[in-house]
Length: 201
Length: 275
Image (cartoon, rainbow over all chains, first blue to last red; front, side, top):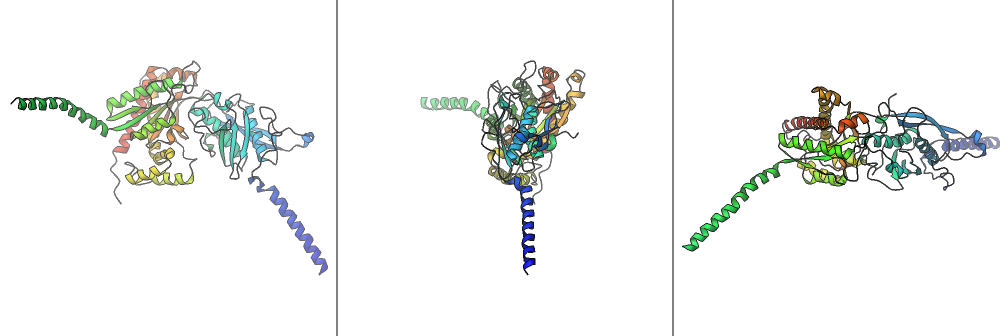
């Protein structure tokens, strides 16, 4: 009796350990995560990805597709980037937006006007990401339906495509809700992704 | 005797005054029965819209085309046409849709010139996207758009239901008709610009088709509504076309043709049988 009991206890402990491991490795992203106050989230104005500490060599990265404007037809096309992986969804999404703002490396065109900075990203429990841009998003915007759609969906589709936990995106400017981006597309409620603007290769 | 004469004179005077007044009332009453089409020249005032490389502004072109379109409709169709602006002034997006709703407009056409980050080209007609509506509104919109009354006009019952939708979401109830209007206009737009006559050859613009997007100016409009992006102000070649009066007239003509065929398709159908 005594020996089986120990075995049982050990067995239970193993099962528990496995369950805990599974729990923390899977759906834990649904939880709201706030980035550590300012320090990590507000480095360079362009929002350079969170500064890797000494262990930078071992820093795990996350592959993301960042969407820019394809000159031939104005559709959105991806460029692959690597951002620092983090257990904070907010940090990862902020790093993603930083890449979008940085602009394309290849032949594609920027989808966000020059001078735009990222304020912060907040993500609700339900998966709505509030992405707060500086006023340059509006002030430097060329205006026009196609240009506004490019900007909106480079942000919305990009986040939803790369981060499964993001279901909708609310674009804010200087911390506030705006009627339209630059006279056409309404920013007064959150966007669901619309992949019809993504080029089909 | 003099009193009587005075009475007659007074009666004559009254008749003289009332006569024309009555005949003035006639057309006025007719005009009240006449249905209204609202044309919305995009932007205006401080809001210049898309800017061309040569300094031309979207707001100027949209007004020029809209004025031509208004003239065409008034000459050839029995509709009253209202413009959301007839000069270079700021008009809020809310007031643009309110003009349509307050006048029971049957159609709302917003005229724009496109802008992009790169040298995109072409004409496209948009209608409202419903992808971001909440569940409740979407359900109601579905019912509205699939009612047997669709082919003719929205029934009074449905109108009450529409009123229950948040006012700023009114367009949801007309989405199917808006799609048809967009198709009708987009069918004419590139066709007319590319095929008819020799000079139009050089005015040709590419067909980008119909699309849906979340236009603030369309959300609150309680009638079939579209937004036409005539050509790209951000493309230097198309910018030159956009300021060409011949091109503007062609565009107005194309939108007008689309409107005529939409009205025909909608109006010629027999009323849906009662259940």
